Image (cartoon, rainbow over all chains, first blue to last red; front, top):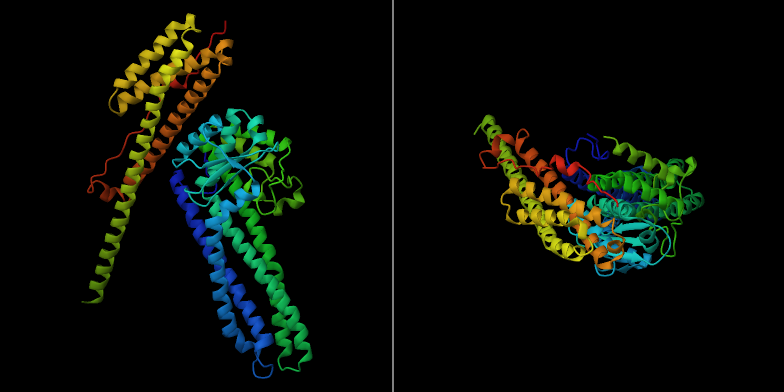
Length: 333
Length: 185
């Protein structure tokens, strides 16, 4: 027996694996919201320390324990994070579809594609998603939508013309895997929170630079301690977005492997996806509808193909050869 | 009420809460099994409807293969009258083998391969065969999840009291695992 769900260790079936993913999303959302809130607190505290408090009456240490500005900043950041997440979940799919520029197709227009999507929806035990075709020769496919109701799978015309039925089934299986594993929801939340952390860190950086400059003019007591705290804040604000991005990319790569494995679990046929990945990898994957905002959605990154070791940490997708390698191992029974 | 009483009350409340959530999980899981079975049913009916169309289109061109066509029709008629999971799965599996052979044979006829009607029907039948096998796969996965929920400790202690019975898998017979033989002329 082969373990088809490496990310869900200990799961005996894929319903359990799906529940584990939902739990992971909740935990991640909570953790990242806390992190963003904490950063917000730091930002508010830095602001208060530098601008609101009279230099002589407040030592930075007293503010460190409870900063009113920090508290309200943390609340505001948490609210923004939740609101932004909600908006992205609600309207994200429409924005993505508008950006990639595809057209919805019916069964009459694309009977085979429609059938394959229906087949895999049955394999996944869910409603068939909407199907979009993007009129371009580039070879790529994507999935979007944060719930069963608004899930959409898109493929390019080039892909339809290049792949045979078996290969197309593997690709659609991968996209259906993203839908079934709720990856779009997961990555939306990760994306929003990473963006928010970058934003706050940027604010803190501006604040501290300004603050350090401002402090110098004042003849304050405990200026040295404040400087050290400011320096720590500066370093944290510098590293936080980088670390958050690394986590985001690592999660994205993991999700790609999981979707590949899910595709094989649906089709019970790794050969189709392997051959499809090889064909997609040798062709052109980019077209006018792709951007940094959507690159992680596609089956193969349309902007850069990551093969060099140095850039592997910041890649949205694992190296295609590594993916094929893992699929080959799944095929051995 | 002493400390012991409170502890006892807490334990009882915890057990009741656990039993409620375990019961609800088992009901949800059982409904999924029923739904998965009806999905198979939908696809089987679809295949029963498609087969006469396909036979109609290919029967003139395939003059030499009347036996294969007759076998498909006979298998379909048996499947139509089958009742109960065991009988249905046996009859449907026989039908899968028969239509698989017919589809493989059409490959040998250039006229049929080029015919758009046949191509469309072929695509529909291929898709329906895939849907049947995926629906069966999902049904079996659902059955496994349900049986696990029933038989694993500690759920097994209450499953029988609530009247839950393990379900049967949709079996794949040995004949279906054989690749249909194609004789090219």
